[in-house]
Image (cartoon, rainbow, N blue to C red; front, side, top):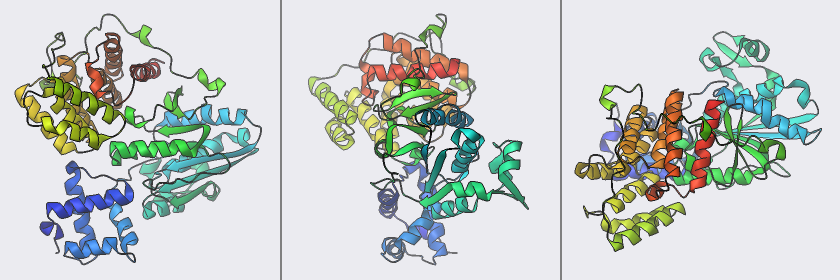
Length: 496
């Protein structure tokens, strides 16, 4: 058996992931090295190629490169999905988004794009939702575009055949009306398949499809930006905004990073789901802006508690101590940090990193070294960022910024328990670190701990009210008001 990865050097591995990011926007951090190595091994074996140089020639050849690259992507990306995944978003589509569009005109064309559609469950769920609306769309033409970077996923969507596991979110009525049983599979009805047009499309491309004359009414893009570096994800969101018509809706996964979504979007809460709106916001929807939920915060819960359900080893003593004083910094470090924070806010991450590098070896430059780790995390350089944090913690085991950054890295890697533990330690050490409260709330909400999430978001609001500015190093270019708005909308959705 051919084992080509045994001969793959680190430089060759780096070239492989650089090529994947250049062509598909998909970034493979060091934590996914073995996934990529196995994918390369499998493809080289199937192509009967034992030498990396020959495989690289195949990948970059004008004649064969595109076809082989598409095959390689099958082994890198995950296509686990199902019908009506995140039901609240489809309720919002039916109860709020489409009715608001229909209310503005008695007839017209409704254009919806499912970007990163995987094997088609999402666009067909959209089509079923619209079919259920019946007479409300009688005078409307509906166009649904479904795109994915992987050709085999697009072809699977066109065929419209699914195992029962994929239909676990579909009701019995939907199964009876829109599917036909074919042995051990369910086939989408021909009528529904005609409503969805499938197309291969790479979101790393600079131009997105846009229907005439104004743009998309609604774009769904869920669980896609997880494969991108943070700055690439922000570029994708900016292109979505450009492709939407004024007043158009963007539907993302609830776990999307706060900083991924441009502040140029309005935010509404519909049927328990957060929806992003390209301005201007219709007057009828303005009432759905999440209102301040601070009155719901009980005065008794004055201190954040350690994460629940992650074992006794995560417990922290209560009450929280007062905020620990920051290490003193010299004038040169202070100015460099200010420049780096401004550069990072403008998404000039390489510039920010270069500004901080002169302080990387100075054990006294705690703030600069913390920011350097943070900038590297924003660039998707997870291993370097984590190593920097561990060096900082070796000198100060409760350094709040280091635990916060490690929490974000763990969250990106899907290590929910570890992520919560680091956020809780960051808050224990510095109760004014607003982003740590916020992302602790996001993590708890993601695993269904609603009460724990509420406490965390209220903790973030309390910290915002204290007027401390140290946490702004990690604000990701967002203002106090934006963070306040994000916390309030999370609370509003949770307490409704």
